[in-house]
Image 1 (cartoon, rainbow, N blue to C red):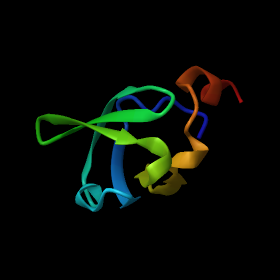
Image 2 (image 1 turned 180 degrees about the vertical axis):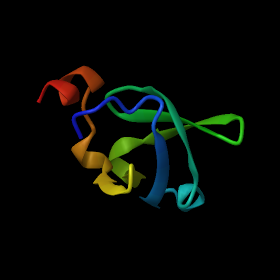
Image 3 (image 1 turned 45 degrees about the horizontal axis):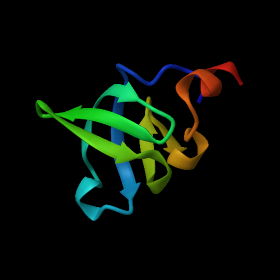
Image 4 (image 1 turned 30 degrees about the vertical axis):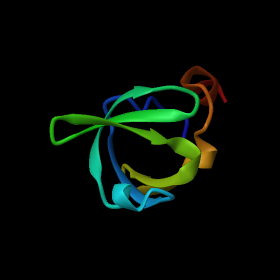
Length: 75
């Protein structure tokens, strides 16, 4: 995914953390390995490569976006 994720709606559809599955919110920050997602007024941290996300109706493996945002956008 070659676009900025901050501000995007995201849903966790698969995760090693079973408590995260099905949660949805807005990405508020991104690092190489983590997404910070605001859900119901609370911010949670999600490890990218341990999840599969739905973003803009597309299924995205966290392993495919586990890069620094600036590196992912360039490629």
